[in-house]
Image (cartoon, rainbow, N blue to C red; front, side):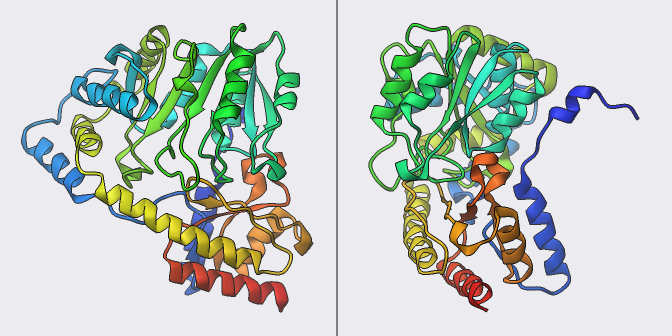
Length: 386
């Protein structure tokens, strides 16, 4: 069957491809330690599950508003006030099945074919995929290891021109675990202040900050009218399979994103949204405990990687990933991914899964037990030294 030409510009997430390869090896009897997938290894907190059960029993099984359940949107307004010190209204919020639709629909709403979009590289691969898919020009902004995977402001300034329509930022960041400082965000805000440029800020790891604190560009003067914020429940509340996310944006953009929802999903599952209300307004103990466990694991994997021959690893300040430099091993990123999986039984992702600037790196997720992380490090050491 004929496929439209634009489908050739659509990328993917290689994490799922590596997961499939790892599962195939497991089916053959090989022991695999999974450090490839970006998913908390914790169960969704019980009170959130019980809220979904209650919602099902109460009949929350029908269509709801395309832009989201009003009570959940009110809870999100409260969340933005509490965590970002920003006053918004429910008209600025759209709830979607996962956070990715905000990215997709936000770009579709605001970017024309031929526009330029600056995005982080290495970075979440779907940014570049969506930009290319709609026929815009993807302009990579290098995240530099020597700056703890932040960017050079002069480099960013040099990339901006009359065709620039959007800058995408992600903090805490996937795949590096880096965060953008308040100074970084102020510099971005200054660069777009007098230009017709939208900032899309992906903050799905906002609660997972281990050094310093999370800052949002949405909080800065004048940026509420120029920002699309992406958030979700998958990471903070271990709700990846629930598919529940949301965006905060100017009303005219929210209206258009809601129209895309009408044309694609109709609405987000009603009972899932009731669980989301409980996630935001209910006890945060389980989430805080999970993040504390990630912080402990971070120390184990960083110290362990830095003890391996040819590998150096900066300490991530957020999320649950490390992005070690493997250049001294003599392996390319793809060679390392294959060697670690096939020879060591450790699944990870090549740095180039996150863009060309990821060459010379691999990504490990430390969403696994300390025991498994230590075993993975031992296995890698054996293949590097054997």
